[in-house]
Image 1 (cartoon, rainbow, N blue to C red):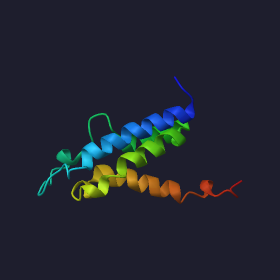
Image 2 (image 1 turned 60 degrees about the horizontal axis):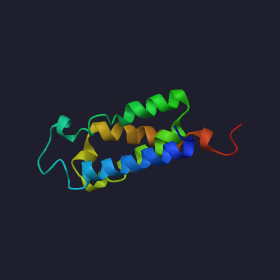
Image 3 (image 1 turned 120 degrees about the horizontal axis):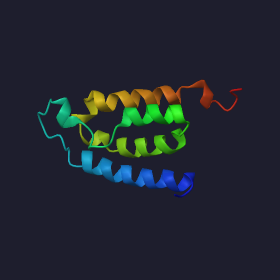
Image 4 (image 1 turned 120 degrees about the vertical axis):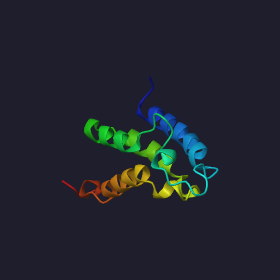
Length: 106
């Protein structure tokens, strides 16, 4: 089953590979406007994973793999504008601005 660090590293590695496969070749291709064609690979629900991790207190596992997957998003200009990716990016930005991340937070 592994500890927290092992789980995080394994998830991050797999997500990085999926990110390369999803965005590495500009996967959506030119002229694609269909949200469905820009969707992440089956089983990759970034927004849902972040919501579940927030409720379960598992952000230290989920955020690294989410970022590893999204790291390659700029390689696919059309996918980078899809709501399915903009929503989790907005969630991550809100987390980053959270006062709870401030070391002086009570």
